[in-house]
Image 1 (cartoon, rainbow, N blue to C red):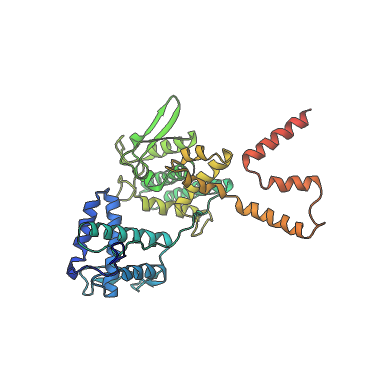
Image 2: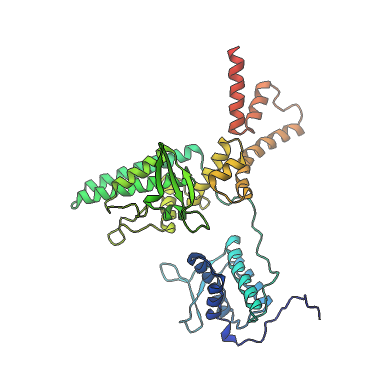
Length: 401
């Protein structure tokens, strides 16, 4: 028998051993951060829930493939529940009705990666065959899956946040009781949202980085403000992020409005609720707040999320640096320039539209724009901001002669 052949059946192992205890042993073995460990366990519990749902006691290679295919099509939204008679239960909506979902390719990839690593570990420990070897996740395109905002869009949302804060304060002032408290709380909430928005769209911070920040991470030296950021995959605030003056002022304005008597050790952004006041705001809540801010300004799309604000920052840094990947990589704190390259193709739709028109005119000779002015306008549509600035400089020099 070929020793390199892929094993398609499981080893003789008691069915009850392929359960949560084995998954917990694996999560303990990988020795990752608590957040990463929870992610692995959540993914593996989804696999366990599917096994119970599908009646699989000892999974084979084909079962892992079936799990992958089940995730990629519309299916019952279920979760592992050891307390349920069948070992799983439906996820329901607010009315109690079972939900049906279709996982996105990136979600399928995450589930499958956890399952593959689990079986690789189980095989190395002599506990189970590696039935997930050489099973591939759905291909994920390299193009960015979120939209970005124009400079005008960014300003529109800023104004919307300011207007909404003013409306909330006016409503608080007309309340029948606790007017001062309501006004103070609405003022703090408005300034908090504005500061978080600027950190996302200007500094390019992730929601988890906004959540993790403490007041002591904010620093001013020689008139320059910085925020020490606890970045993705790091264990402490160790990335120094310079801030625009207006962004720093917005943060200070928010801190000065707070009523929880913050110290340097306090979280930079906290809740104002009656029960949760003064507690750090989690990334999910920040994401939801920023999403609502965009919706309030009229930008309501599945492709516009809180992360779109970071994407917007990256896109415009790339534009104002003349497609300088290194500078953009440093600004966005990407570990690899490959990640930064997603911003190179932001204008391809506009460029392709121009090329499509020019190709049509090429096919139908004689209809192409013939004047020098038209040709210049066509060329300008394919230029990035740095090239346009160079063209303006040349035009100014010519006019001055």
